[in-house]
Length: 439
Image (cartoon, rainbow, N blue to C red; front, side, top):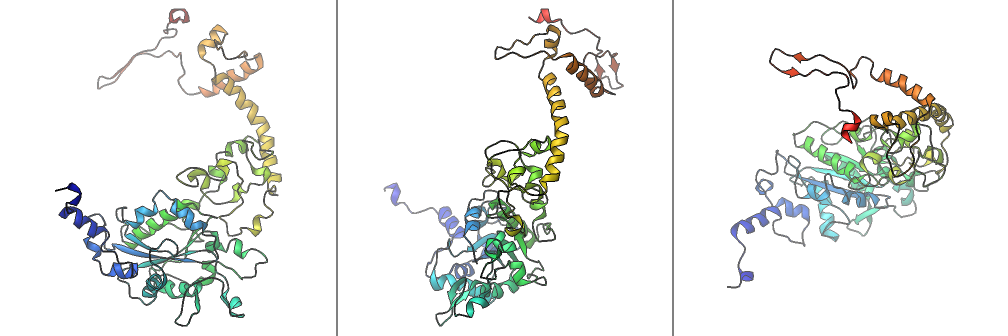
């Protein structure tokens, strides 16, 4: 018999059924999940009492950049969450208006089941984009952002879906600056009355687990910041981890407790008072418009995707896109922030003393001790000048401080023997072989 006609083995068939189950594209994925036994799949892999969590993605006034950034996450990846690869983290069933397989009534049925409380698993709500004031659009019979329709063809605003789903959600997560703070759609002069999820649901809102709104800002956010936060919240939901630490604005504290400048690859230039004068220069970017010293974000340490890139890492300035005041409080962009008049001037003044002193130390640390004895540097690449008397004098006192209360090379010590028999050989001055024997 041709090998290609052999039926699949029992193990192969059972593994396939346990992982995916029968696929019926005429029904909603939520209904398919209710027909499955969550505990039957990959026994032992999904730890904890909660095996499956539904994630309902809603989009308001958004450019979809948040969705794009999350699909590029790697630690953990979206795939890790969707197949339940992370120990202790329930498998996520994602209902997304772009990435879901089903469409039309079958797709909207997913949201209806959650709103009606008919799911057999907990769910979280993820909101991307700012929330427009639908009352303004309703005055003329229109709407701003909608998904699905009622029995009579009438679009259902996504804000309505948020109102329906939020009370029963285990958590509501706002992704991106538009959802967390209002962002660009809420900038001065906008006609939509746009606001954040936190502004819309209010201070008193608590999820079914007692959680306020969780905010993961960024325009667009670092994908790993979002997936890592989701994984941490799901571990808590499953009873296998503590509630992650969030700051007073609902941001993951471990991701947003430092400024861009504190982890910036260019911060050392600021300390020495050297600043870029034009884009493309390697020095600190503060004087050509960078707001990094006052912006809470980890883009410089984590990178944009897969620990690669990031605004300042690739020569771009920080315009404060993770902050609640963005964009109005950071305008005009690409202009020197007023605070640098004091801070960078002070840094430049101090740096004018620090830089030369460091260069003197660098010059001596770039020399072998043998070169000082021979007064010659055998480099064929270029001439290495001998330090002058002033630099030698300064370095002499520098080394005195360096070895104060510490042993230094060439010291004379006696042999030491410990009670357990361990022996430290003595060191006598001039014991090393002279340079001529090493030639």
